[in-house]
Length: 406
Picture 1 (cartoon, rainbow, N blue to C red):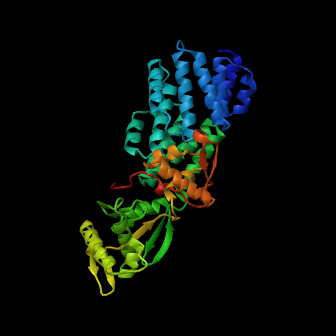
Picture 2 (picture 1 turned 30 degrees about the vertical axis):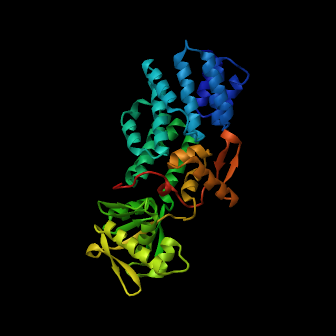
Picture 3 (picture 1 turned 45 degrees about the horizontal axis):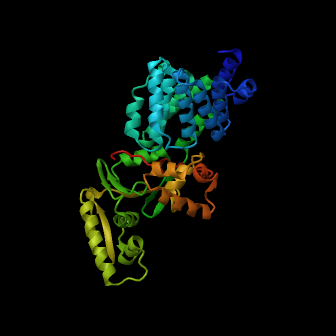
């Protein structure tokens, strides 16, 4: 490898893409194309970066499998950064196997981290933890150790283990400073802010207040009965009643919990659950049926008693009842949750992460765009959606991942 290629590679490792381009910008040999691609990715031009890396992989040819595999890993990193979650994961797995077979453990480990980060983004926490457990971060340089700790912190925050998350972020901050890469330091600082911004809203006895992530963790570990509007479930200790696929029942449960210990009128329950503006006897009959279904589902945590004007939730053993809601509640909040990470997303990537159809996501994006809450750039398959983050709020509870007892 010539001196210019070596110098450019060192510049990229130090987070200096312009310094790398000064050395190889006019060269079209395979190593230079690969380094130019990585430099363009660090500068944010992902389309040009992918083109350069693919050209580099072709230029290396089949006689240089390690170099080709490194190009594939770099392209996978760009796909992850640009939220192209539909990028073929099998290619990354094959590249990782090639690198391991040829003794390039450093880049093979980095490929593994990319796989874990993708699993974390789409909410597959069990698979991410299993894959992460196979990696020993002590053998990697500071930058890779920072990636490791960021993934550990991300999983811990999704699991609501805030002490573990803080410890991982402290280690990530230390290794990021050791690496001396400004972008990596900024990423750690951004992750750390999540723990110090409101994650949810507590509603109890008619009053509401914002909660930090560690306060949410403490609430779910308490003896209170929590009607969780972030996941549409009712929680108490180890008991979990999912109403995610029963929106009418959850609307009734939330209305009863918000009014607890008072009762709720039948007219208000009908409005909350069915959107009924004019009530007749058929509505009242349906309400009695749905209340009966909800009573059976909640029998392990409490009962629902009829009153003169409506119904009241009666928890077992005099437990407290609270509602855990999103900090900002609006239509299509789940889509906004992903877009507020500051990255650009395609509709297909959002559909994959949300477990919804691409058409459903596209309708939500069109609605949000009409309200001026999101904007897009590019056309056809290159179209990406982005929005600035909501100031002062973290969206960790909006992301698709199981919470304790799920």
